[in-house]
Image (tube, rainbow, N blue to C red; front, side, top):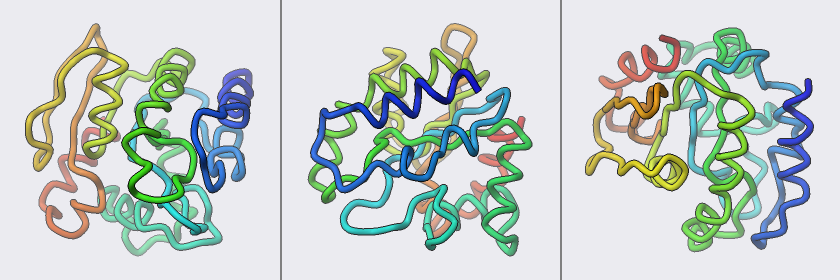
Length: 193
């Protein structure tokens, strides 16, 4: 695909941060899981910090975000690969506001700021109909790219339109899994609408 190469190369070449690894490149995320037409670009926060192997698209390792999205999508008992196939088939691509694995949690705010250009590149190339910002860092990155303040609270689901783009703000999926399961159907609707 023409769009995958510039995205993977951008992640590989970026030198803005000290990182553990680059899971989006390491697991060929764009070439394996980017739908032909991205209807919804769902933005999470970052790969888990520290010396870990978990990553949303690494099926060889448990990942809490993948588990939480299985609940939201309604496939909690499904195999992990089925979740990724469902998202792919429905035109949903899950990205992150921070593309590389942070060395620790303290690095997250600065890395998020350094990675805003990459989210803008994804938006420019993928041209989704909808953005779903899942969590505080995702909401801040959307603000930095689109210039619109996120809602004061991210404990519910809120929707706005910015230049014809639907922008949905939700709590982080791990919050939904632990404390807000009642929000799962509403978030599912916005992922697949």
